[in-house]
Length: 158
Length: 272
Ligand SMILES: Cc1cc2nc3c(=O)[nH]c(=O)nc-3n(C[C@H](O)[C@H](O)[C@H](O)COP(=O)(O)OP(=O)(O)OC[C@H]3O[C@@H](n4cnc5c(N)ncnc54)[C@H](O)[C@@H]3O)c2cc1C
Ligand code: FES
Ligand code: FES
Image (cartoon, rainbow over all chains, first blue to last red):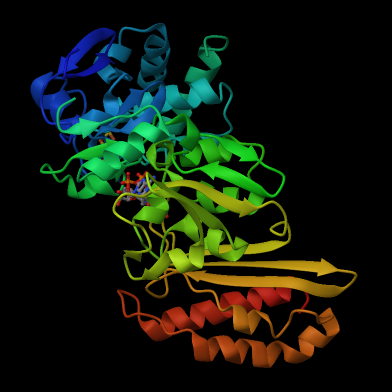
């Protein structure tokens, strides 16, 4: 039996031999070079580091590697290969919901997590779903609009 | 893994906890703020016994490793608890943070703990030596001081099945979804044939622990609403005397004034 931490990362079986107390955010960026995962605060406040863990939105800065044993982790790099991503990406582009882009990997994954749970969200549900993802640039309205478009265009996908 | 454990059964978890110097890890949303590296975690997220929410006829037993999201998704959990939990941070924190972690961080700001106080909840604590059931008020001995032995785990939260229906809940000072409550209040009232059978009031984030004063509550128990109204001023005065806020970012006097206003609003809401 291996002593490494075993998990699935963007669809690939992965073994991590480092310290189980290491921060998932750091390991994703430094060991696996997944730099689409952004670091904004390391305090769980900004959502820039969002990933999907077993399908749920999680702040990777708030996760110790050992917690990932047996889990399925998807970052924006892995998610960008999916059909869901295509729809969300187009919707964000359609309303120019992206400015500097720093928050966007997290926003996109938060959008996915929301639509999986609530395929036809109300505006309030969208704002709640994205409430842990801060954006300094856009004022959120365009992003909310993008989520509405994604829900409409992707009808039946979620 | 080396230097970290993820047991799948409670028995295994307790044996590990007794044999090694381990830090229980629920969702990590408190622990990872520090992000200590020189530590050996006991990951308690995959222990089936700690993930269930069941009604045993006497109590609603909430598994200590249930996340806030799981609590919100359960049809068994009372509305008051859901309202408090739904106001915690944002989805990603609620997907990770656990009920035991909220208790284990020892903070008087913990939103689910306020509800456990007002409900008179108990904690089931288990070790290889056996188990004990401790009322939440006794579990908190002081600021960050818990009645938890080094080999024990919080395994379940035992919530009385009834009595929380008629409630009043407020969380004040939440400027955004992520603000940790500056002050929180929960009151419940149980009336039978117009007589107060039970009343409970708890204040969060004002002192070293959540505050509940059972002796003051007794002033109104057994009284009709009309009789309770006559006691109202004395009741509020008793809280005025009892609440002793710790100094913090917001002045103690201000926080006490807010506490008393919330108490008045609760009494107004219930016609007392
Ligand atoms: C951005 C942000 C916003 C937040 N907002 C709120 C808020 O609005 N309201 C609120 O109440 N909290 C809030 N918190 C705090 C935190 O999310 C909660 O306290 C949460 O419940 C912690 O749970 P956890 O499982 O993540 O704890 P962990 O970090 O895993 O553990 C916390 C403590 O509990 C101990 N512990 C865990 N499980 C057990 C067990 N089974 N037995 C014994 N000890 C155990 C751990 O050893 C540790 O000491 C916030 C945190 C962040 C980062
Ligand atoms: S970097 Fe993780 S929430 Fe900000
Ligand atoms: S686009 Fe710049 S932070 Fe959101």
